[in-house]
Image 1 (cartoon, rainbow, N blue to C red):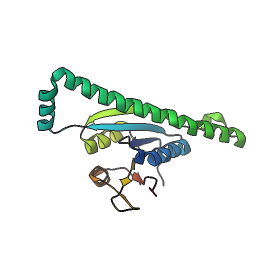
Image 2: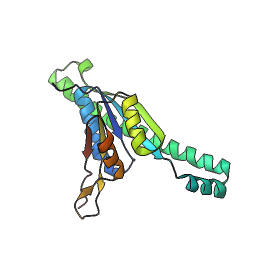
Image 3: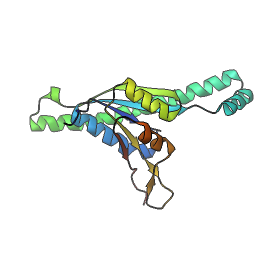
Image 4: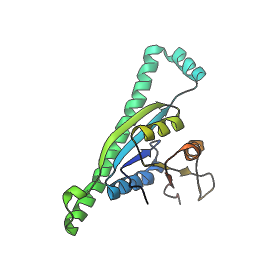
Length: 174
């Protein structure tokens, strides 16, 4: 028997390549009335790079730069939540026209998470923490003219995940 989907983790690097994956995640969350967890991981720099940056910028400026990066990521994710409002409004209109009870329509995008660390580890950890039933990620445009490719982070999640992972290709560039 198919296990119902009640929580979906959408992992994004905040690029345009992830927009189709976000649309798919929002659509799936709407279909199953699932919670949508939006996750962006700020990859931890290797220690030697971090040390050089701290030395060049000074501790105060380095902390300010790191905080700005985290705040920018959070604002972008909040913007995605706002974009999802259009999907939700369209769905609500559809439900009203179809005579479906308002309580059975829509989804709740309750969690916006910005994590700091190793990308694969954070995705898997957050999927477990929020008891997600599936992970959705966007592929990037490939180096081949009309193809797409998946990177090492997606491959790592695919190898280690204990729940289904869906990879959504980006809109092809013409």
